[in-house]
Length: 91
Image 1 (cartoon, rainbow, N blue to C red):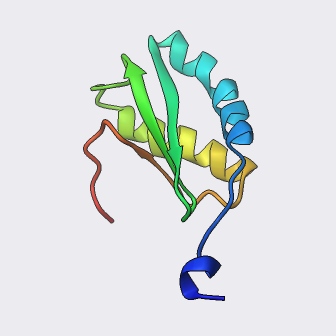
Image 2 (cartoon, rainbow, N blue to C red):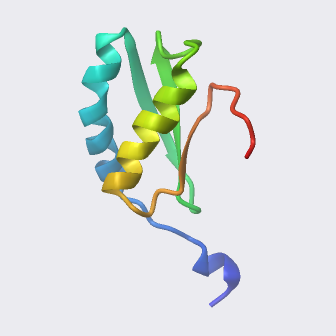
């Protein structure tokens, strides 16, 4: 097995959507929302923050401290969550 095949992670899209559905009421309460864009083979989940979440000063906190934390808790294979429409610092 090649190194590339060993690093592939399979994450159930329906499970990710299920967790996002649990998070959405909190986001919608503040006029925001989240959309699943893609799931990378490395375990990265790509989302789009929408409504008041997009452009909000707290959006990175919402992304990392809320969405990413809940997804990792429910799906250990999730490596990180990245918003495709936010400027995020590289760590």
